[in-house]
Image (cartoon, rainbow, N blue to C red; front, side, top):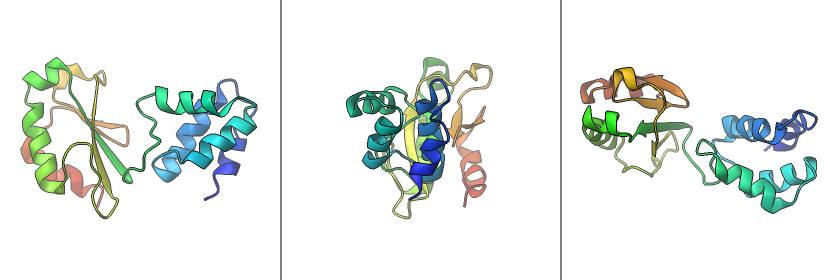
Length: 147
C-alpha cells in the first residue's frame, strides 16, 4: 500500500489533509489506521486531530468498504418517492443489507443525507456518481455498469 506518496502530494496544499484522505480513499476504498497516523505526521498534527478529520465527513470512512460504495438518500423527498423499494431491490440484487459489503468486496450499501438532486427522486450515488429518479427495475442495469 503506497499511501505515503499519495499523502505527501498534498503536504503543502491548504487543507490538504482532506484532499489527501479523499485521494487515499479513492485508491483503497477507506482510510486504514496507518494512513491516519502517517497523515498526522506529514501535516504536523496530533493523531486525534487527523482521526477527527477522517471521521467528521460522511464521505470518508475508517472502516473497510467495497470497491463501489452505493449510497441512497434517506431524506424525506426520496423516502416519499420510493427509496425504500430501491433499497429492497439493491439488497436483493447484492445479497446484503444496508451497511454491509458483499463477500467479494465489490459493493457496500450505505445511507446518506440529501445529495442535492431533489428534482428527480429517489437518488442513489455510486462512488459519488448520482443516479436520479431510480426505480427498482433499473437496479440490475445500474449495477451491471460496475461488474
